[in-house]
Image (cartoon, rainbow, N blue to C red; front, side, top):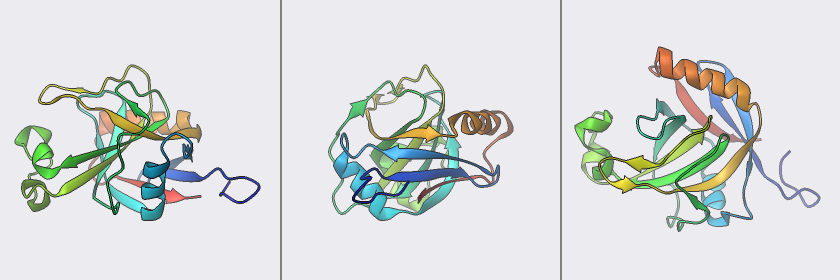
Amino acid sequence: MAANAANPDRYIHITLAKRGVSCTAKLLDDRAPLTCAAVWDALPLVSDVYHAKYARNEIYALFPAFAEQEPPLENPTVTPIPGDLCYFSFNGTQLGTQSYGYGGGASLAAGAPVIDLALFYERNNLLLNGDVGWVPGIVWGQVVEGLEEMATACQDLWRAGAVGETLGFSRV
């Protein structure tokens, strides 16, 4: 599934390590080329996983900024569908308030850029945050295999908790 001259498509694995579940996503190079390039060049990426409070059916991980230059808002959405991978860029002060529950670490308090890579696993998502309003995301990938198993694991993450679990992104 890796890209080559005959098949230019690129694929990644998304993994919940503790739960032993992964899915495969196709990068949307034709719709979000700058974002796809930034993420691809930074892989592999692994961090603590969180379940969304506002957007509903979303899991995500936070990373220090990794692109040489932040991609523009290409292929934006505020209504992601099941299987969408979204990219969000925040400064730490946007996420540093106590209500978000990240602990207000030094990087958040200092305002350092923070990248949120998210997987949406079910329908009826709306990227509307009560503190800041609409939060459009860049759709840079689409799950093509394993979404049902991942959705089950995401529901377990919601009900049983995320402590000790990581979300990883790696090249196929």
